[in-house]
Image 1: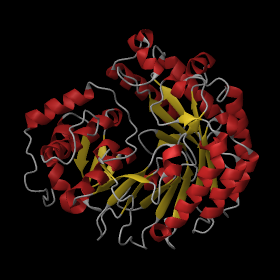
Image 2: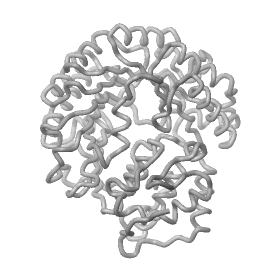
Image 3: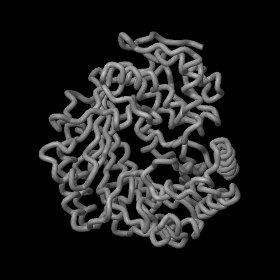
Length: 467
């Protein structure tokens, strides 16, 4: 095993192997989220934006960029957050759609110095129920994007099956020679579970079929999200959901293990029957392995922790680039959007998050940035490592890790001992077991950094999966 030069700040804590083993065991006993959407740091560790202004002095014009567009924060399930959803969301307010779109268009223009004339590899409208956006509002945002080099980019619209429309896809196609994709939160085809989720009117099996058919008419690729390990759900039912998705011919199937635990502010967490029926982590792991195996048997290939793409198709771009911050900058616009630039470059790396509610975003004077994080050099390596895990393997000889991977030698040794990662050929690779417990892997890698920042007063200690 080869290790590069260490480079950690003075006073960085030293942890024994036994301490790291104990921390790993604690994390593996908890809920595993699998998403790792942000990498280090999570939002609670980021400081408030005092001036409200984010302006890196320089960005590398040679690096590509991806754009994330959150048109609004609205959703329309019959239950609050589908009963289980922990994503920020608000009740739909159609009167705010156009004002929000106008504000987002202005933000796109204001970010021109970050995007400039660089190649835009992908544009993602989402998360949440982005396809709830009205046609006039979407037209405003698309018009603002036309000023950047998006021609030929992958363009994805996320949402629920019911709200995809021909007008939406035609608007996105007007950006010019783009590769369209729709991404649907299906969760399950089981109508009993759809009723428990309050999704029976926005994601029924017939509505999923109609959305897939519409995408085919408009030459758009299709992606669907499925939840597994619902309370008391048999493995056979999970496999049935996957097979129904494959039978529709969708290009990408994203499999998410349900996140549910005591104390979450969602209705299902207050239901003793639901909570009692949750599988243990080991049982959930076995179910996930069965679903993964079924996808492999059908010719799908795993591209991220959660995403499986149909064999023979053109690989999707947004996910691959978003999980490689040392290769590609990410600019997010809209309420709650996340941006990150300059990882591994000569300028300091920076991450920021916009104000997360529609009212706060619209009401902000000047910049709409809410939280900011300026990275120390070794933290850039930690970001590359924790975010890159979603791609199943992380190179140790690229980007910030090329000089600083040795900082994480103690953690990687314990993770390798536990059978969660392999470390060889200048890369870290998640094992199958490590994929399921990837949240614990990332949390352990960030643990000493979080502890160090708390000790010097830079953030409050937090009982979060990644600090």
